[in-house]
Image (cartoon, rainbow, N blue to C red):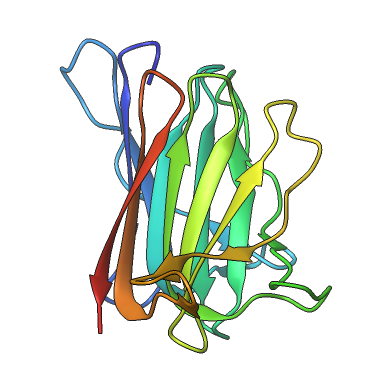
Length: 175
């Protein structure tokens, strides 16, 4: 994070999502606390999680929920002041308003404040979308084409890194 702290978000043995912070001095950890879902009375649960520190000091988290839906926790955004989290919000699937479903997620924070998300969709295809730097909208998922560019790349795991020059690099585990 810009302030020197580090954030860890995990899927616990119980399938719940947990978060903790190492302080900027590197001398201590906050301890894992649950990320609450829905109405705030139960721990959010799922199978995959990815987090990105943003230039403004916020943390953005994307998850594959227990229902297979891709949620962005500004998707929980932990705000720059560290005072709270937003609600889990589903991301719409490619070409539809219905929630995206998938098996893996990755997010990268970019130098301009935008965020890039890559998922392995329910069909095993890789999809990408961008949240604008103002945090007010998403581009919508678009397929990542493989090989000769005529078919969607397919596989099981995705990773993405935001680079200082503003480009993003994607790694996949293909079929």
